[in-house]
Length: 151
Image (tube, rainbow, N blue to C red):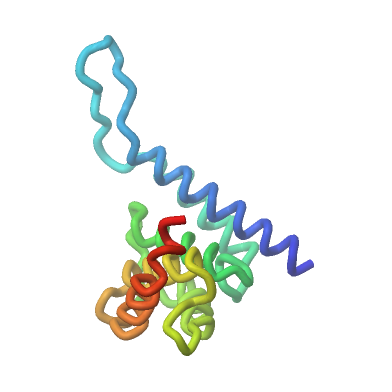
């Protein structure tokens, strides 16, 4: 059960990240000339529906299930979407932030390189002033493991 929940969480994280990336991608050229720039919020309803689905599947637990990396990806995407989710959004993000904090290792990492990158990005996106030590230590750990980051 836990494995299928983790796979679903990772799939949802990838889907959310993909939808956000599409919203930020350069628009297609309509007539071969300059691209027509869309304004306003792109994919607003789709993102809201994805977040609603993720929240329903997570119940009161972390949004990415037991995956630090998936939870970090989802929180980062939520922090950058049109609603600009923040640490103050309480029950929407609190269980996931608490899960990330609990997952922090003594060496400052959050597990492997991917988990550490996404967890530190999520914490700094949710509230850059609330988690300075966690983010600083994670970035220090990543700097010391730069060879793994590049791979």
